[in-house]
Every structure is written in structure tokens, then in C-alpha cells.
Image 1 (cartoon, rainbow, N blue to C red):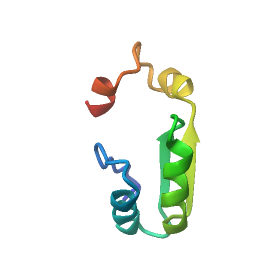
Image 2 (cartoon, rainbow, N blue to C red):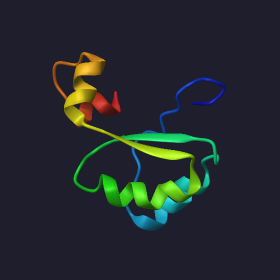
Image 3 (tube, rainbow, N blue to C red):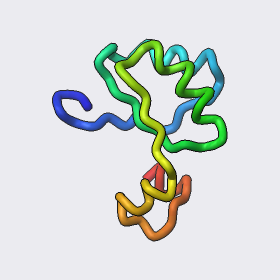
Length: 78
């Protein structure tokens, strides 16, 4: 959140170097939420030292919470 608002960075590269650059742009008090996908734990380990915490969410739960009928990358990019 930025001033109480969520920020969406859009799509990110999953290369470790580019993730570190992104993570360094975050504030120490930021909380990062991301879907628990195949490489999410590796990404979380790169980002975690730079933020307050990283939260991994079950994609099925995200679908239930958002009310989306389909969970697709196209909808995510919306």
C-alpha cells in the first residue's frame, strides 16, 4: 500500500538480478503479496530481505476472494 493504497507493479521478470532491483525499490515497511506458484518461494526469498514481509496466497483462494470465474494470466494482467 502506498498511503493506504495497493500498488501493482505489473508483470515482473523472474530473473534473480531483476527481482533484486525491483525489491530494492520497495520500502522496508512494505508487504508483498503474491500467488503461491511453482517459483514463488524462490522469488519470496529474494524479495524478503528488503520488505517487512512476503505473503504467499493460494491461487484458488485468490479466485474465491476476488470473485473471478476464471483465474488466468490475461485477467491478472487486466
